[in-house]
Length: 114
Length: 115
Image (cartoon, rainbow over all chains, first blue to last red; front, side):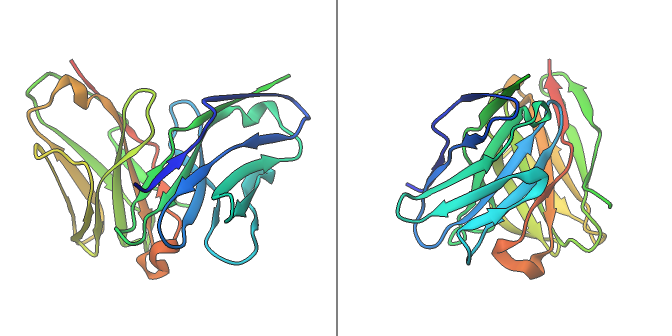
């Protein structure tokens, strides 16, 4: 079955430290991978995407993600976390063989502690 | 920059009532998607439209229907509401010309509460 996994429900990190939010996928063919962030009572905001090309993708607000085909992973990273980064993060994949809609991971709640 | 607009932002209904949610995509975006996010859950795809035609269908109940109009706005019609329909409903839009790789931009969502 094609799916997206985020193995950590919650990630805690101190302000100023690097952060990583993990995502692994299981899809046939070439995956199109996205990261979105959701703040309380808000919609989903696009951070970055990997379609093809350079495995390191840079996105909004200083976030980046590395596509690793051998490990089927697309982990989200930031060198120095801010308290304002605290939110719910969703990894998503487009199952292009089945349409254009996203399949989301379960989400990871990031808490950046001052 | 213009974003996806959803109305209403909050809606409270009784069981067995009907509800209509509206979505206005970003200008020049011709594809609209609807997602349902239950409490503490990830968004689940319901249905999408491209150029006023249904393009994909996900886990949308038969009690729900949707359409896209000539101005590209979309409406999600929900009938015989059940308590389990209480959720945050997101609309997203994208320019189809970008194909499958195009980013979907989400609206702020409509929070539906069924009492």
